[in-house]
Amino acid sequence: MHKAVISCVLLSPMLLRGVEQTPELREASVKGSLRFWFRALHADIESISQLKDKEGQWFGENGKTKSPVTLRIQKQNIECGEYNPRPHRKESRGRIKGFAERGTFQLALVSREDLARYESMMKIALLLGGLGARSRRGFGSVAYPDMPTTLTEIAALLNQVHNHFQVAGNKIIPIRKTGLPFPYIESIEIGMEYTSATHLLEQIGKASSKHNSPYTGFTSDFAKKWELKNKRMGSPVYVSMISAGGKVRPVVTTLHTAFEKDVAEVIRSHNEQNLSRKFTDMILTGKGE
Image (cartoon, rainbow, N blue to C red; front, side, top):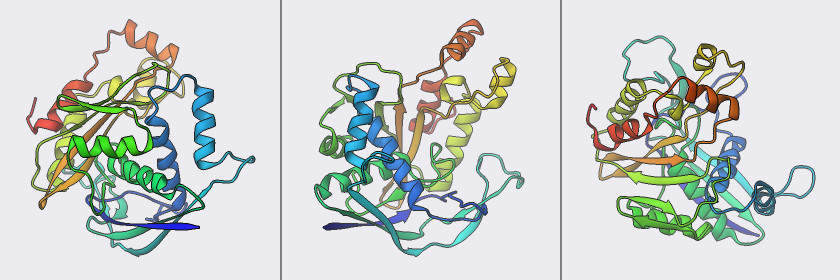
């Protein structure tokens, strides 16, 4: 058996809770993130069944094969607090308990084989997605030693797991896409420096409010307006953070948007605008428009 340990530091508050709605850092949440981002790497996959088979080979299949990798969380040193999940709004209502930034913990990976690829996959998930609620909007961002900070370094990390990415201009893109209806990586971009995680979280919140559209995710409020029952979709645009000499920079990962047929028809009939690019640009540039 082989073991690797990744030492982690929270760059922004992590809103990860257990059954009792108290802050709890759980292996299950980390494993779920691993699987999600593994699937997101495969824009070139030929079929959904092929993707499921490959995921099963990496992480095991429920009830069929055991996962070849074990994950443990250890040496937690994290303080708790209460946080406004929409920091651009100064009202105190609706605060959520979570873990404070600058808290530390370790992720221990144990595998019978190919440990390096699992370590790379874990680093990709932490870099692009963070952990916990509102992780698509900058919360729960994590730093670790030797974290990539340039597009070239990030592309090299992605290619250690799935050699299918290239830097094109000011973004990372997949070399080929088959266009299947699942959330795979369309692009990765890095933005300007912000003075603090709080400053960046406020800008993300402002951009979310100003450029809200179905293309940046929608809740039951949209569905009710359109008379669509029990419909919601998480944002296909993920914003995480990287440390930059005492400051932070946003990493914006845009995933392929795959609307269900009835939702896509309503969006067309209501002529809803795709505001995702304006949302992204406002975060990358720090400007108000």
